[in-house]
Amino acid sequence: MTPSLPDFKTLKHSLYTAVLSDVLDSMGYRDQAMRPFVRPLDDSSVLFGRARTGYFMNTFSVAEGENPYEHEIALIDDLKPDDIVVLGCDGPTTRIAPWGELLSTASQYRGATGCVTDGLVRDTRQIREMGFPVFHGGIGPLDSRGRGKMMNYDLPIQCAGVTVCAGDLVFGDVDGVIVIPASMAGQVIEQALHKIEQENHTRDELARGLLLGDVYRKYGVL
Image 1 (cartoon, rainbow, N blue to C red):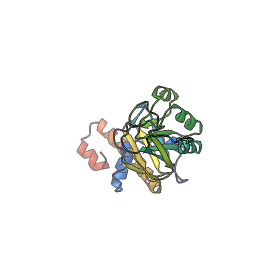
Image 2: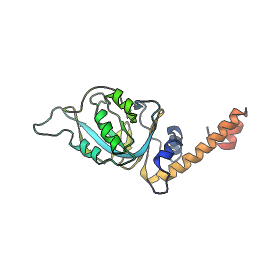
Image 3: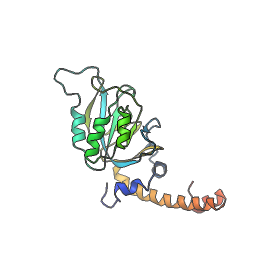
């Protein structure tokens, strides 16, 4: 995030995924929305922060003496405030739950603001009680041990159809998850805030009974 940007907590209450998607579309970035099967555990959740990425490959056993959680432990222990863990999973998303209560607890303590994965999530009741925002590809109890292993972290990954690099901005709400490339974050946010202002004017005039066509010609948003 560039120093000139407002902080994530302020922006989280001003932005939403639809307007960010529209702005990215207008800039030629039309594939920044994760596939719609990625849903929040709690529909009221909103997350906004910097991506910290990890990728799980399929495995079918654990070697004697191996720590199958080595990289995910290293990633979680290195989290900073406003980080969001983004986990992609190789193959069917129904095979493993790379995220659960204990990782949520450790991440929340380090100041991270959420997790996004196209894999499963488990311990859902406990995570909801914590109020930790988690966006997931499904719910199931399957541990990753012996089924999948994080091969590395903070490298470019694919998550629900979107390429995510460490440091990209991730915004999620009930409508979905948007990834903003770090190199253009300031420009995207500036244009999104301007579009929201225009949408507010449009809404106010529509509520007063003006015709949609007339208002669209005036503000150019829909």
